[in-house]
Image (tube, rainbow, N blue to C red):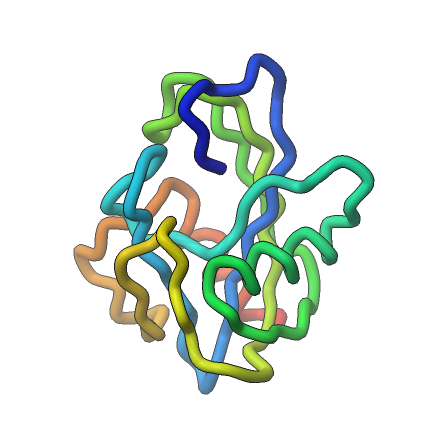
Length: 140
């Protein structure tokens, strides 16, 4: 969900709350929007692409992981001027399980970790992330 010029229409996006051994994968964004904030891997859905196909593609591009998508865990609408965004996004967030490979980040992120959902403390996270983690935990 990164571009130099924000789109002029709402954009559909996906993200994955990926769990492994009770911990959730968070990646830190290396550029705007959301630079310096931890979030889930994800991005825009391409025209004609299903939500699940988009999530598999985005997770692969951003982390190299293989996942099993379980269910929709929540959604968030980001309006222009909120959440560090110049665009309008509807983000569909899915609960997922890690199935294979270790994370290898692309240039959209500069850090990652498998975090205990109960020990996120003062970690800088994107808006709505904690609510989606809570909902996703019930699905894995």
